[in-house]
Length: 282
Image (cartoon, rainbow, N blue to C red; front, side, top):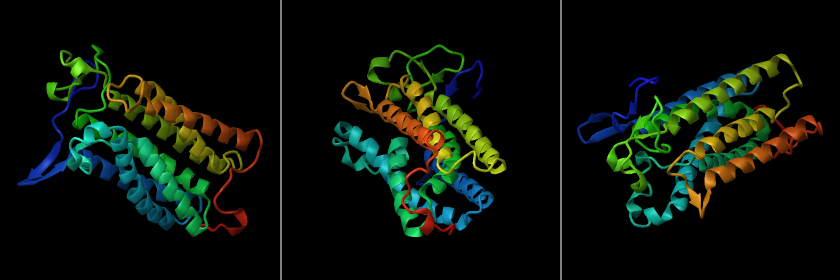
């Protein structure tokens, strides 16, 4: 598989098999993304003077909340399909999770975690989002191995070959499609570099990157790319004629801009779940 001038073609969803046991690329990549992400979060926590064990504990909450919510979100918007084969509802290893569902579930879990541990929710989010963006960049390759989440037909040099069994009915006569998994992976990698650069810049320039700013910048930058990429996809979750991911992304852009205005123009801390007088660094 070469990136420039040659087609992409998945070797298949199975990484390795041991008799009846199969390890799938999708699950392996998600597990790798979580492991790399939590390691990075704990490192960043140390640099900000936050107990890294707190981030390890939060990761458990995030995994338990984010993955089921990502699956539930996807299934709800594809209910017509899953109602015909309910046994596949829990078959997450076959693909079919939505990052917006994961973010919603993870946010709820983080709010509860922050309140119970008397720490700033926004402080936690600032530490989580660099690892999250890197994890998204890694996880998107699971879509490649599953031959899913691709775009419209194309003849670009970096076109993606999709086998007939995975093509939408409207595009059965087309072989090559936009590798939107690659576009989003590269976009998330750029977001990661931006966030990491801003994190260390903030350490050197005290007060210029207030608590919560990094989380808002992540929400804005990721959502900006997702609006464009989602417009290329053939398998978007829909609400009538509207693409759900674009609606959610545009809403996230508006909220993140409001957060940045709150921090930089109004010069006020973002509303938090625990008052500053009751916070601890764990």
